[in-house]
Length: 135
Ligand SMILES: [Zn+2]
Image (cartoon, rainbow, N blue to C red; front, side, top):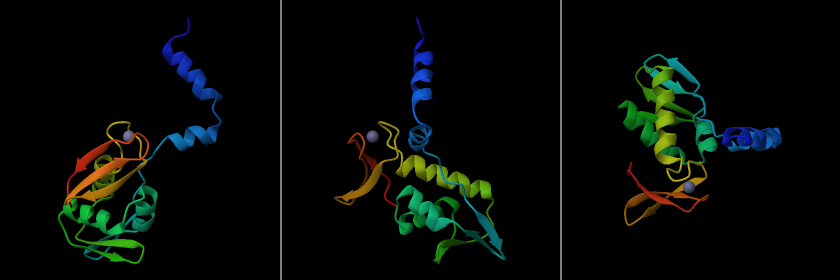
């Protein structure tokens, strides 16, 4: 008898490649550039798009995590101070974990809603609702 893993492997190998690719959610990679005393997140608008989140929310999160001032600069985010790619990449990963992925079903098909001054992560896939930190 085939093991569960073998069955799973077989099931996945039968899926067309596009279907498996759509299932796997990847944290967007940051593109960082340092300009004098500032660190520029070049693909900020693209990250917001990919995560389907509002730029002001992501900006507040970034500024809070790295502990500095930030301002939008066209599609980019300008942060005061010098930060490594690693720090910013980890910030995106934390944001995804806290504000994008559903803790119940681990899918990214979610949105944020405000109710009675609380922020909730609402999952479109399974319907779960989880309280999140207000930023
Ligand atoms: Zn869910």
